[in-house]
Length: 164
Image (cartoon, rainbow, N blue to C red):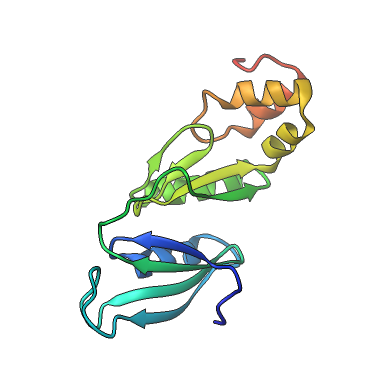
């Protein structure tokens, strides 16, 4: 894998390879590339440990850096995965949460390595982009949700009460 001009670097404690393999199994256009081992002892690794993993997630170039427990993930960074329908939304959400992850609000969840994900149906992001009353109704419907319920978003867009 040739390193892209701009690559997302994600800090892991020690499980970058496991995370990259999970992403490659879960998301389309995703794969694991080169695995680089520490040539010597470093603050986060011993010589020979996996230090850097090159991978792609939905076509986006990433590297996973096993840097030890110094830094933690936060919601300030997330992958946003656009979904076409409820089945796809459920599949990705359930894969992340069901593999040791955790639910959050408004279509966000966290994988077992602490990386945050937004599983975002296109119908929702397109409604927000339209602005005005449509965006307001879609957001009102979304705010109490964990995993996004597309039927409820579509009903809100159409003008039905968000809590129906």
